[in-house]
Amino acid sequence: MKALYIYSLLIFCFNCTLAQKTVPVFNKLSKGSYDKLNISDSLLVDSLARLERRNEIHEIYIGRHNTDLWNKVNSDKDKLINGPQRAWQSERFNKLFHTVNLNFVTDRNYKKVESNLKIKFGSERSTVSYGLCSVYIPGDHKIGETVSSNFYNWINYNIDDYMHLVENTILDKNNFYSQLSKRINDSSNKNALLFIHGYNVSFDQAAIRTAQIVFDLEFKGPAIFYSWPSQDNPFQYSTDETNIEWTQKHLEDFLLDFFKNTTSRNVYIIAHSMGNRAMTKAIANISKLDPKIKERVKEVILAAPDIDEDTFREGIAPSLIKSCKRITIYGSATDIAIRLSHFFHSYKRLGATFNGAKLLPGIDYIDATGVDTSFLGHSYIGTNRTVIADISEIINNSSVITKRFGLNKVAKKPIAYWKFRE
Image (cartoon, rainbow, N blue to C red; front, side, top):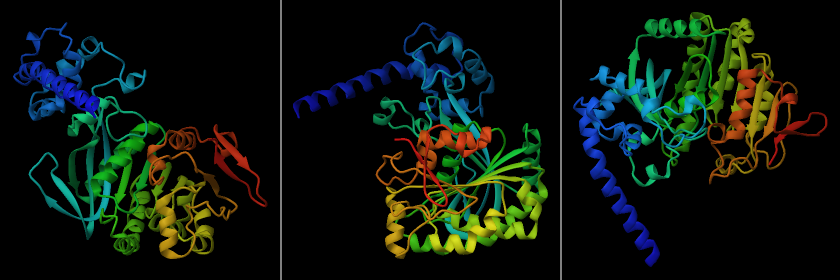
């Protein structure tokens, strides 16, 4: 106890000292006195890496008020930031920060707020809205993380050590598809990625998870996330179940519009948990209206699907298999959220493997048991490097399951499935 007290006191003194020495540097930057800074100052590395510590610096950081100052800081950052390498050796992971621009579609309610976020969405049902948002990613980001990997940042909380929305704008439908089409046409292979979140997720969390997955995959092309009115409350499971059923028609309409109004050739769809209920039915239904969609949907990924297994096998899978090039399911025996859903419904969920997986021809089933060591073991689609690497092989390299690294084949007649090496 005494040692812990002394350690806490030292940390407190260190923080106070650093703050006293660093604030003047921030003040100089915020007043535009960049040229007066002492380049050899050992604190400059930390100062530049944390420009967002003050609101006015954050505004400079994203180029809102003093673009010239930010451009000068940004152009000289390689010379100034000569401290330890951040996160990875790749140049991409050694920047002060990153931003990921996403398109979104949502049937949540919205309201105006007084902040950098022009629009904030709630958890109530509403008409469909379209828009564009930007997500901030810390410079020391590591794969699978939505917070800074620097331990110092854990004990000195600041929002800019975490991924967060920096702008959120609603667009009218025509403008939405006009901008999205341009982004798709500008991509080398006319790629697009669509993400549908699961239960107990807010709009902001959906944006952050989408941005993190897109950034970690180094996806080449625009990404869109569909956010349905999840209550963002673990005790509102039944309400989320009702809302995901209600949102299915809206998702179908969006998908039909998307394929009609864009020239995307390679579309990748990822759904997590309860989001798979609307996604699988929507894809199966729209392909009946437009069979040509199959040629454009290159991959459908069902991550930890919270779907009744028998319902999927008998009522959804036959049509879904005919609707896209390839389907991959990730399940786990240690996913507590899926096991609780099993207990709640009394019937096995598609994303559970604790009693084995009922396999279907035409679908790749991967057992992710053991790769996620978190308490719930439910978010491995975005947080686990092994799973992200496998998805990268699927999307970026079009690798078939028999040639992907880190998977062991589990012989099971008549259909084999696959398991990550532990």
